[in-house]
Image (tube, rainbow, N blue to C red; front, side, top):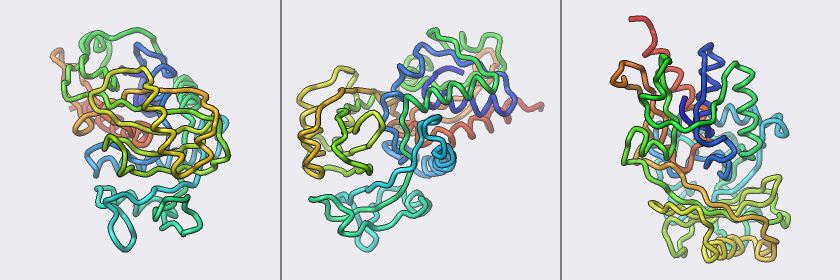
Length: 328
């Protein structure tokens, strides 16, 4: 297994709990990956193909909902929130034509928001109670669960898939943005996301909205209440490689959030974070044979939906490994 982010760890757990010997090799520890910076809302975001993404997301929704019964241990909680209507919202039920209709239909209890449930400046939206994951806690839980299943983690860089294949029956490539060089796959590219963490002034629900007036069409507005503070977002800048927070961007993020929740404008800033989402035109979740004949299952390119699709993709990894390693 290459990669120790949420995609790699969940894939490793599913394999290990199915009886396979698993060793995760990764340059970065889980706490140093993009997964650790993620906002943690279980909702499909910036991922294709839609049909597969919805199927994977619904499996993760099931798993994370169960884990939410032990939030201190797993980092997962069930939190109610609102997805505000965007410019693509359609009449009647207000559902946008964004390819995620099966997701909206399947999320338990999803409904139209009533007027009294909307923040000032929001004209409509949909309400749902979904998992919101505190990612640093969740990643530590995944590491413990993997160890309990007999899996190990080795901290070292991997120069090639051929190197990863030495002495193993199968390689699972969950290298995220690293797949650009490791495979190599030039279709993989970063989508930079910047966040601001502030002291929570009393926001108890998550909220997200597309922003028609943003300077960049990829900018959006979201607020995610976490135990460590209120996460404000965000940006999605394709092709941007910098991990250095931009003060002007941070100021714009706070201003966008304050349009809906004015108290945020006066909240004390605790931290600035920048992560690089591993994007691809479509997720690569497929098996092939390396030149030496070793089975290689690729599982990367999940964009901004890593935690949302992680368990569904992990089940698919298990199926592919079983199929390719089954006696002919």
